Image (cartoon, rainbow, N blue to C red):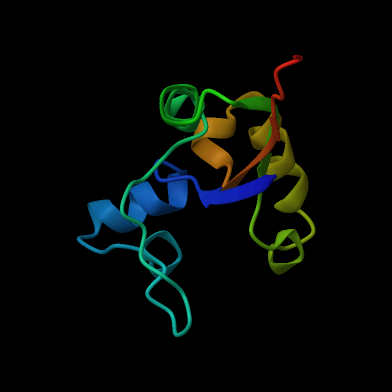
Length: 106
Protein backbone atom coordinates (compact mmCIF):
# COMPACT_ATOMS: atom_id res chain seq x y z
CA UNK A 1 0.00 0.00 0.00
CA UNK A 2 1.26 3.48 -0.81
CA UNK A 3 0.09 6.32 1.43
CA UNK A 4 0.84 9.96 0.60
CA UNK A 5 0.19 12.65 3.20
CA UNK A 6 1.04 16.33 3.43
CA UNK A 7 3.81 17.02 5.94
CA UNK A 8 1.97 19.22 8.43
CA UNK A 9 5.14 20.82 9.85
CA UNK A 10 6.85 21.62 6.54
CA UNK A 11 8.52 25.03 6.27
CA UNK A 12 5.96 26.47 3.84
CA UNK A 13 3.05 25.49 6.07
CA UNK A 14 4.84 27.01 9.07
CA UNK A 15 5.41 30.27 7.19
CA UNK A 16 1.75 30.45 6.15
CA UNK A 17 0.65 29.77 9.73
CA UNK A 18 2.86 32.61 11.03
CA UNK A 19 1.08 34.90 8.56
CA UNK A 20 -2.29 33.74 9.96
CA UNK A 21 -3.15 31.44 7.05
CA UNK A 22 -3.55 27.72 6.50
CA UNK A 23 -2.42 26.24 3.20
CA UNK A 24 -5.02 24.71 0.88
CA UNK A 25 -2.56 21.85 0.28
CA UNK A 26 -2.54 21.07 3.98
CA UNK A 27 -6.30 21.31 4.44
CA UNK A 28 -7.18 19.71 1.08
CA UNK A 29 -10.02 22.17 0.57
CA UNK A 30 -9.74 22.14 -3.22
CA UNK A 31 -12.67 20.73 -5.20
CA UNK A 32 -12.85 16.94 -5.13
CA UNK A 33 -10.51 16.53 -2.17
CA UNK A 34 -11.48 15.26 1.25
CA UNK A 35 -10.55 16.96 4.49
CA UNK A 36 -7.85 15.59 6.76
CA UNK A 37 -9.10 14.57 10.18
CA UNK A 38 -5.63 14.07 11.57
CA UNK A 39 -2.30 15.63 10.57
CA UNK A 40 1.07 13.90 10.45
CA UNK A 41 4.71 14.82 9.99
CA UNK A 42 7.76 13.00 8.66
CA UNK A 43 9.46 12.56 12.02
CA UNK A 44 7.32 9.81 13.53
CA UNK A 45 3.60 10.50 13.78
CA UNK A 46 2.39 8.20 11.01
CA UNK A 47 4.79 5.43 12.04
CA UNK A 48 3.27 5.38 15.52
CA UNK A 49 -0.28 5.61 14.17
CA UNK A 50 0.18 2.57 11.92
CA UNK A 51 1.77 0.55 14.71
CA UNK A 52 -1.12 1.30 17.08
CA UNK A 53 -4.08 1.28 14.68
CA UNK A 54 -3.09 -1.50 12.30
CA UNK A 55 -0.47 -3.85 13.76
CA UNK A 56 -0.87 -6.15 10.75
CA UNK A 57 0.73 -3.46 8.56
CA UNK A 58 4.48 -2.99 8.50
CA UNK A 59 6.15 0.22 7.33
CA UNK A 60 8.74 -0.69 4.70
CA UNK A 61 9.92 2.77 3.65
CA UNK A 62 9.08 6.43 4.02
CA UNK A 63 10.10 8.89 1.34
CA UNK A 64 10.05 12.69 1.73
CA UNK A 65 9.12 14.53 -1.47
CA UNK A 66 8.32 17.92 -2.92
CA UNK A 67 4.85 18.39 -4.42
CA UNK A 68 6.18 19.57 -7.77
CA UNK A 69 9.98 19.95 -7.98
CA UNK A 70 9.75 21.44 -11.48
CA UNK A 71 7.78 24.40 -10.09
CA UNK A 72 10.93 25.65 -8.35
CA UNK A 73 13.67 27.55 -10.14
CA UNK A 74 16.69 25.57 -11.27
CA UNK A 75 18.94 27.17 -8.67
CA UNK A 76 16.52 26.54 -5.80
CA UNK A 77 15.72 22.90 -6.63
CA UNK A 78 19.12 21.46 -5.58
CA UNK A 79 18.95 23.36 -2.28
CA UNK A 80 15.49 21.95 -1.55
CA UNK A 81 16.63 18.43 -2.48
CA UNK A 82 19.57 18.80 -0.07
CA UNK A 83 17.13 20.03 2.58
CA UNK A 84 15.00 16.92 2.00
CA UNK A 85 17.99 14.70 2.70
CA UNK A 86 19.23 16.63 5.74
CA UNK A 87 15.95 17.78 7.37
CA UNK A 88 13.02 15.92 5.81
CA UNK A 89 10.61 17.01 8.55
CA UNK A 90 11.25 20.66 7.69
CA UNK A 91 11.51 20.52 3.88
CA UNK A 92 9.28 17.64 2.72
CA UNK A 93 5.97 18.88 1.36
CA UNK A 94 4.61 15.34 1.18
CA UNK A 95 5.56 12.12 2.91
CA UNK A 96 5.11 8.83 1.08
CA UNK A 97 4.84 5.62 3.08
CA UNK A 98 5.15 2.12 1.65
CA UNK A 99 3.33 -0.44 3.79
CA UNK A 100 2.85 -4.17 3.49
CA UNK A 101 0.40 -6.44 5.25
CA UNK A 102 2.07 -9.01 7.44
CA UNK A 103 0.42 -12.38 6.92
CA UNK A 104 0.89 -14.79 9.82
CA UNK A 105 2.19 -18.21 8.87
CA UNK A 106 -0.19 -20.92 9.93
